Image (cartoon, rainbow, N blue to C red; front, side, top):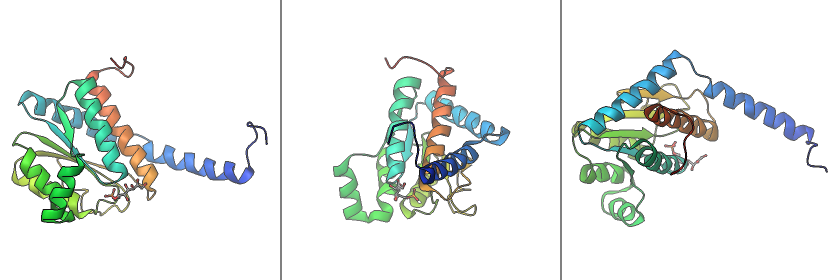
Length: 195
Ligand SMILES: O=C(CO)[C@@H](O)[C@H](O)[C@H](O)[C@H](O)COP(=O)(O)O
């Protein structure tokens, strides 16, 4: 089959898929206000000598890692994520999987830091417990969730993003888009060299 011709079933699937992505990523003033508030939170964090800490599981852990390096390198806002396998296995083994991120926050965060908690379902216990720990330590909290409108993560932050989709990949892609927009808003440009 020539590369230009598309299986009609695939076209129908992809048309629907792209429609879902467009609906999820459609922006309004509410989303713009949240992205602007995220920028302000990150700049306040930097001014008081803090760091932005990104957390997530699975695909969201990958997004957390990408956001942390881009915010630090491209926008000069100190940022990190918990991706060290030895630390993760130690804390999960010693305290349980549902509490390992809370303990990573306890050990690594300070008052004045900002926690960005990413969970597509908004239901992962280790993310919810980490937010509770962050609140105890007086961190700012930004949440990103999706799926059910009443998921428990959705209202726990100072700034809360929610994607109206039940597709993991659409929710994750939208989270990444919003956070990348916030990073580029800090920089003030959409285009810049890598170094
Ligand atoms: O990327 C995906 C699904 O697309 C998976 O890796 C997904 O992130 C994992 O199943 C996570 O454990 C789901 O947790 P959460 O985002 O709902 O908190």
